[in-house]
Image (cartoon, rainbow, N blue to C red; front, side):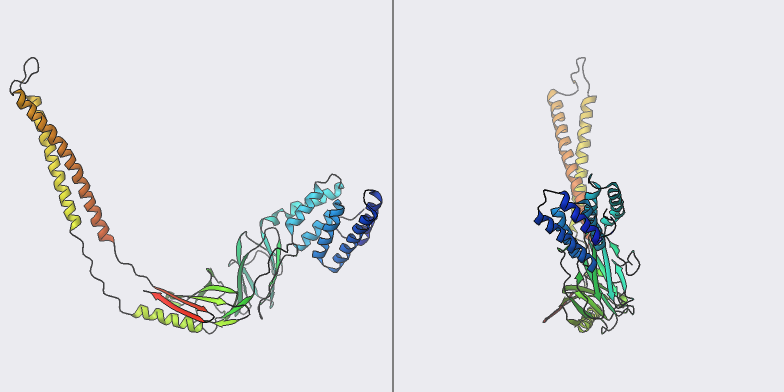
Length: 412
């Protein structure tokens, strides 16, 4: 019986012999190839080459998909940090009716243990020199030093700082869920490149780094952010390694003075931003001490009030006409009538004239009241907007540094 929790060479050879004799459909050449793959996988495992071991096991499984081989592949992938791949391999064993009950039970238990690993990315960081601190999005990792730690889905920023706080490095990337990414960062020189997960060659290694000198900036900035990420360990920093490319640095000094510096970081190069920071601070100081431009005193326009007056007048006239029309109608209702209801105190022509005039005045008065109300309301809104509007003041300082070009600009 092949052991489920090990990768013994003798056990694998015994399996090869059993398969070769029990499977007439397997040709001698194919059987020899299968056996050689198993021997090579065992040798690679003994040398510690897990990536090569996994590759050879997959080739052997393609020839003969034995549950024992899938179990061993799952174990190798788990050791490599490819937890998602390990669960897939274990699942094929746990769901294989041809696998022994003990092996199926073992791999089902392994799947249950690894489920929590699939919801996060995992990082194993080796930082030189010893004693350096690591932060994940500004917080300590949820694991002791030297052990892998989880990172949330999406992009995360890792911040590394030497024990004395003088040298740091930061970079952001998205880490694959259910897999471990191993990296080596040397803060004594150029940071090492990212070592991708052995089980996933599709991950590209991180690009090169360049350094920004912060130690010669006078005065010392109180805080520093890079591409929107605020460093937590910036107080004593003298040198910061950043991924090559264009980076936006924001430095905040005392009295809430903030300047922006756009730098183009080149791989393997070191650059100083002290002169640019000084120029930007001087530019900011001059702008703040310069006499403020004369501002013409704001006066309210008379037109809103004219509009309000016209509206009130129109509303009053309309109301008068409506009241007068109502009075005429009342006079007709109160006129003397005979037994048939015919008005006797007025002639028919007089009664019709009063009625027509009342109806006309009522219509005109209603229209004037509506228009007048709208005009008055418009004038009120106009006056409020004019009274509450005012000038805006802004202050911006921006410095751009590239290899061969400098730009300082501002608006106040």
